[in-house]
Length: 269
Image (cartoon, rainbow, N blue to C red):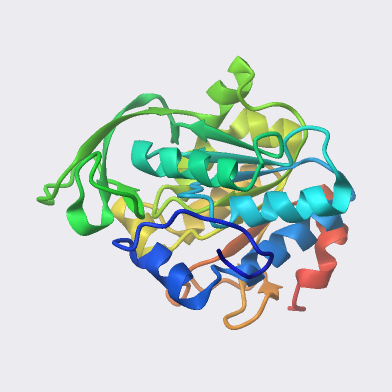
């Protein structure tokens, strides 16, 4: 049982550093959950939070629990997308352990900028069926020697067109270890229609694996009329001043027409 930001049950794989940390400390990124709740509240809507790269649900599960406590039922308040089959199975189990089947919907898909075949590596160089953990899509031209699990990419737009992703998304959280921008590039129509606020890791050194950088994120967002704010280290404030040479991780992407709703997070120029 984890204690923060709310008590919830989770089946953890102690071979994973992320889950081992949660086991030892009794929590996992409680401040991120609270931030996502505040971000959704600022939109003034009751739309769902889309968690892209949900892993085993250590953000999705407490987020769904807190939203259910505050707002009651009425359909999924969190939609959790996870690419890795073993992770997705653990995600579904952690949803079940907390009785969240109606509040948190798990989707087992790998998403990117287009539909194609890729390979993914799991921490610890695990093979499929060996356990759960963080994972990253291997760059197309990479010769890195490791255990590779084949996956088929789809896109957010394809999921929306099929009805797997419904209308009414307020916030997107994305953490895919280097594939964050690729995933959003496959969701141009979805982002254009839903206009959610997006909080993502966009870790610089992981983006570089795929030939991308924070300037590519800014350029992509300009085309969708989104502004880009970098998290100020050690706080939950964000600044529009982004030095690509010094940037490490964490961006907030805000539709320009909704910027005033999120001003409490912005640090002045």
